[in-house]
Amino acid sequence: MLRFLLRRLIVAVAVALTVSVITFVLSHVAVDPALAVAPDSATDADIAAIRERYGFDRPLPVQYLDYLGDIVTLDLGQSYLTGEPVAAMIAERVPTTALLAFLSILFALALAIPLGVLAAVFPNTVIDRVCLMLAVVGQAIPNFWAGLLLIIVFGVQLKWLPISGSDSLAHFVMPTIALGTFAMPALMRLTRAGMLDVLASDYIRTARAMGLASPAILFRWGLSNALLPVISLTAVQFGFMLGGSIIIESVFAIHGVGYLAWQSFSRSDMPVIQAIVLLVSLAYIVLTLLADLINAWMDPRIRSAA
Image (cartoon, rainbow, N blue to C red; front, side, top):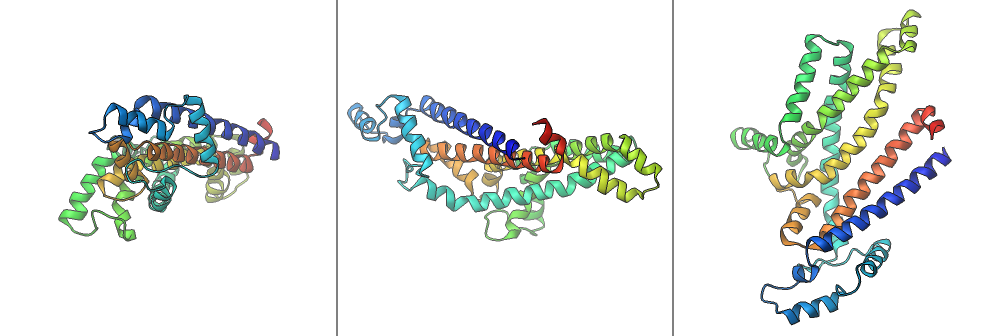
């Protein structure tokens, strides 16, 4: 297990460094950082002075090494627009986005696993078709459109739920449904496919021939093995929610990391954009690493294969 962990850590560090290089280079190629900082009335001399002041006139590899050194010391720089430390701006908003993503993935799993198991236990029946139809509908509706529909019905017409803000858990109900519904179909289909494979395996047939009760076969032997690929996909979907919350946070005026990213993109505030992209990428890497470790812990074949 230690060998497996070391290999995964080396891969994770390599991926993180690659992401940091790509993010840094693209942010400097896409927008001239000196122009992003300079006011509209700035002259060529002003822009040249800004380049010298912030070090934008130095070679790009030198700037990247400084940037990497700052990241190691958790110094993410300052916002070009507000002058606030970027780390403090992001840290203030991470709990809101993390809570939204956590509630959304719980909502998606609460729907996906029962529906996937149900569809696999009754394959090619009306129940199976209804479950698959729900998955298609969930995948076909864009999350921002689902959010707008929820606002109209439950916020404006029925007045059951607040339509904006993040002051209480009630504010997260509609964003959670909108974000979780979009993630549910892939998890449901994977659960169904995994259960179909497991239920058709020899050891399940043997367990049935030995007279074991169906619930024990289904949940103890079947679901525990079928969920291995679902764990990996759940980690990926959770990372997607952290990054994909930009639209939902904008629709519901939730001041999380996604809303901050949208504001920073619209104003070309590069230090904030770089930090958010790197944060989301690192979240993906860490979640994928955790999923690999959980899978390896649950299935010795994965450890031996590594």
